Length: 287
Length: 258
Image (cartoon, rainbow over all chains, first blue to last red; front, side, top):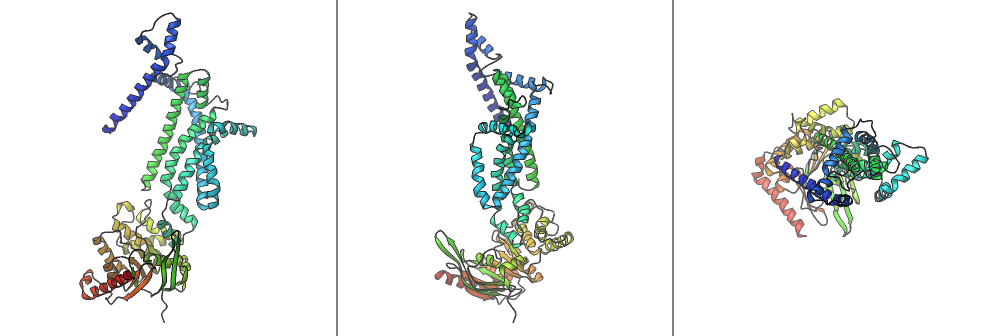
């Protein structure tokens, strides 16, 4: 543990230092500009101080982002439109629904693909093609089409999240369900085992390490999908909407605070999946 | 006349590969009687494993007749006539030893009570009493292989087919397991087909030794062992044992010459 703390802190320190340097460099022109308008000259020390506390900096300094994050999380009532907890909660609920839909769809498709060569040949290329289309291009169309069918609110956004998260699950599960070697399959043949018995007793348990690896990618993709889905809807709620509002009004600190909230949310979700993974695989003797 | 348990007539098997056809087996004729311990020995590529897999209907011969208990190998497999032991134990890491042994019983829909009784019985047979609740990783390689033999015995198939079951184990463990296997065979009276490439192992265990040679895979010699049924490990130093071993070696060399 001791040996890992030092390198981790060092890397973090380098990142923060680099960020401060970039903030000074990017925010300096505006500081000089202001000074020129006021007819004063700006010393280097004053310039640095000013780049740290602009209200709409090109690049907010780390402490400004932290302050924005802190205010958004603890400084507001959680029912407030300014609360990152409120926006985060909405994003989380859509992410969760999309993740569940995507995971179920991915697993079901994987099962049909391993048992049917036709499905393998016909579905897999489309699944791959689906991921090459930029999600930003598809999201508005999905929302508009579903809205015209009277489906609004959480479901369209969750479907976009599912669209991103089903793919890693599909690829992982196809690999996982095919992972038992021929010896293990032959063994079950000598018992005269049915396909169903082979699936439930061998293929499914064998696929668990692959499933969890996919779920970690899938849950992060689901957060991205949700945020992208929140952008075009003219939505007033969710971290994506918060990002969009921030960019409309040049509130860079707000943008960064929302970004960090999204990153924290995604990291927490991946962390939860990892925790479950460790427990399950350990119990199964696969870790 | 007694009918053989396993009866192969002109069995051939050709694999079509990108480099042309490979004759894995060519005109194999063999009769195995009930209760015999038959070893298949030969160099890699002689088709000994392929022949064992044909008996278990894991491969289908391209020509010839192969009958097991007077029905086809495929029907015999479906009638659950075989216990098959592979070179690797192949135990499921997520199941305990008892649960691994129960696997075939679950698939064959034995009652819970019957499952429990049979698991106890075979654990005792392979000398693993008290290890049922352990997981595979808690056992040594030799013990894992014993568990896999117990799994093959659990549903009382008449025929036990073993494909180099002790090939991955060290010689000391292998000697011990060979001795135990003979004791087990004496108690259960099963018909055993055993693939190996160790001459001492084949001679020590078998009542009948089938010597095979490659390209194309075929039988070059079938030796009925003159050794008594009761075989301590020290029998391997007797002149009778060495004479049989000598004949096996000669058969292997003759096969190489062609």
